Length: 99
Length: 493
Ligand SMILES: [Zn+2]
Image (cartoon, rainbow over all chains, first blue to last red; front, side):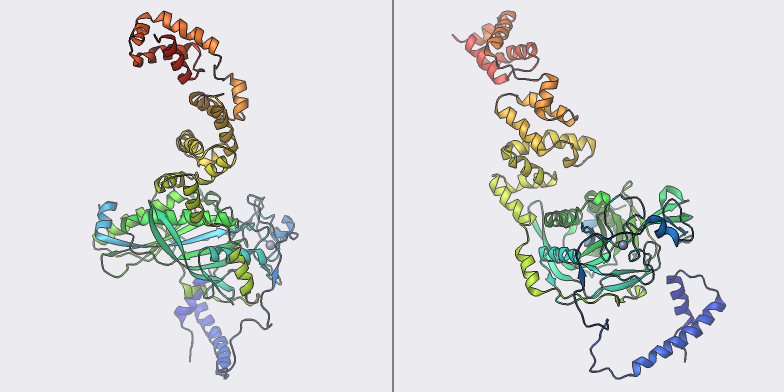
């Protein structure tokens, strides 16, 4: 049984700023379904007496002092960018027409 | 078209404010990059704030402390245990494609801030104060006027990405009717003063270290609250007031014509004072918040929180009440000082030796006029409290008359130096040499025999003509009171 609808896949694609075709929506819906069903198996485990956690190390308050560290050299910072311009990261148009 | 008055006669507004404050820490929220404003683009970045694979955030202790202090100053409860959350969205201003924020476990919650408008007290509920990281700055190119709409590409500078950002969210504020725009402005001004007093941010709206989003809705009197809009980009105190007012008028007219308000984000435009519809926003579920797995929870120690609370400075309202008493002012006097943004300036001038009355006179008089004419903040006129105190001292010592002092102040405003330097450079001084003045008075009497006769006859009001003549020959550098006394004594029987 499908747990994710085509509409949900299309919505996720929009949130992720991905342009997907109708065929791709079908393909991803199938793939995501398999993943979701695998993850859903975790839900079958009885965790009634297990407190929820967000971290596997039982620590709190790991803090650092407000002291300046070395930064990346700018050329190095921009080295991984495909198309820097004027010392900045250049990105394509953010909003489509009418958005 | 309904006017503002028409709208508040028919509808009741509910407002809410979300204020973002960039903390003035030395380093960013989760890495050791410096936070200097105006640095060359992308020179204050590292693998953590660029979101490079394998990098891990470590929380800045000073940012936690600053946020707890803000929460305490706003009468909030401080969480004994809370976590950061990932807010997922795809937008180039966050290189990680998520922002580390707080969601259902804010560091501080459920407080209030008391705000005064024309002597009336409004208690604004504080829903939450939480901590997050600021985004990078985008430069939109290829479109008109640097706006994102119509831009063909954007250039991103990540210097600001990761700077600690505190978000302060009010509870909805109903029941303030026509006062809504003023209350909104007064709240933001008070919040700014509180945060400045705490010394945790420079809270400069014009530099973006304090930014405001304003929620507004209208409902018919006695009915349930209406649909709200969120106006972003409200970046000055004046704009806070103007944006609430214009949004109330806009919504009132839509409702009056049978229309519906769409829940949306709107963008405020400083130049026109109007807002336009913004991009459709993701909803909270679209952000897919979840606890940040790269950070461990925060558990502020209760004793530490207690210590921070005990060490809070005197907060602005208490401080102002004390000054009002010390300076012997009425609440209304204090309000006008507050409206002019002159509390600190007057306080510093008094600290430099001027009397409160004199300090108030200069800052609310000549200097306010000067600032208004130029459309600048009072504190940016270039005259320091120390210079005002020096000027007043010269007046008190009789070295300057009020009139001459104003000329000297002009020189100080023009950047000619301290009052004493302006006096020397411009050759301004009171003619206090009674010998020279007596000669001038005698000359004036000789030149106006009929006036002199009137004064001898008891008509003291006629002395003005002779005083004027003396002031003219001394080029305004004599003390009018001294001249008057001399004139009367020379012509007394
Ligand atoms: Zn960094």
